[in-house]
Image (tube, rainbow, N blue to C red):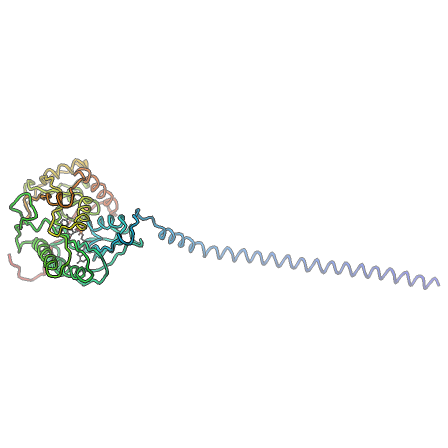
Length: 420
Ligand SMILES: NC(=O)c1ccc[n+]([C@@H]2O[C@H](COP(=O)([O-])OP(=O)(O)OC[C@H]3O[C@@H](n4cnc5c(N)ncnc54)[C@H](O)[C@@H]3O)[C@@H](O)[C@H]2O)c1
């Protein structure tokens, strides 16, 4: 009896122990599984962290690139007016990356038109119009007007041509082609699409004038075989072409006879007095005067010219119109004025006279005043100060801060017989 009771007690105790042991074992198992899980998770988390930081390393430069791109997409353009479909014109400016053309592009863009600039970048540059690149109303085409162009436009401002003596004398044949074939191509385009064309002609059509001041009915005094003839005669024949297309084909033409113009974005190698004197004065170089300095010039500021061009284009005046500032000064007076405005200690150096250099040049602008209600309004000193500021910045931009304008010599084939 006693032994049976002891057996039952022993089996009850071992069952309890067994249960206890089983419970402990279960707990240990759960704990170890839990531990493994926690361990695995921390390894996983560490791995994830490492992967994340690697991805971050690769992605960060890409993000920076995207930020740069976004910045360029959200580039701030100068303010542009909104024009209704009816008033908005599609306007082509040939030579629109040059000095005058780029200012004209600014005005037409800000007035709300759609502007296409065509340029072969002979003397123009992208920098002059870079602030419009990407704008929905603006297009820049690298094209030479000597080749035909097929686009749809309502107005054409035909400015493509080198404008300063060193530039147009550099390759006289190309200057002639640009002003003749180029003008024919643009008139052909105007005829085809029914556009109005404005030709940027020049006071050089008057040559070395025998009347003073020059009005539009003066026929001029041009040496047809002199060094300037490629430009002067090129522009004269361009005018002739305009009137032939007007009479024969009914093309609407406007002809602006532009007198000397100056302002920011003038070419550093322009070679004409204003830019030469400013650059020389800014660099403490002697101001070079050709001849006695008593020859006269009259200069208009570029914004005045641009307003005149737009007024003429939108007028009903189809005969030539002078656009210039009649305020006449001797070259010597210009030299002194620029020297003073720059505050330069440069000397004035006299050199021998240039061939066919006109002695007097002053526009008669009665016609522009009467028919366009236009006249220059920017005072000479104000314009000069803006041009001086521009050239000062341009000089700073040059790597070595030294820029003496040295016009390229004219292209002449070696070994060829030349007529004197
Ligand atoms: N600036 C003046 O004082 C002045 C005076 C009289 C007339 N103009 C006339 O005004 C116009 C503009 O003169 P600017 O002073 O701005 O000169 P610019 O040299 O700065 O501009 C002329 C532009 O025409 C471009 N060009 C030249 N040949 C070309 C071609 N074959 N195809 C396409 N593009 C071509 C040049 O790259 C340049 O961008 C010219 O027709 C010039 O004869 C200017």
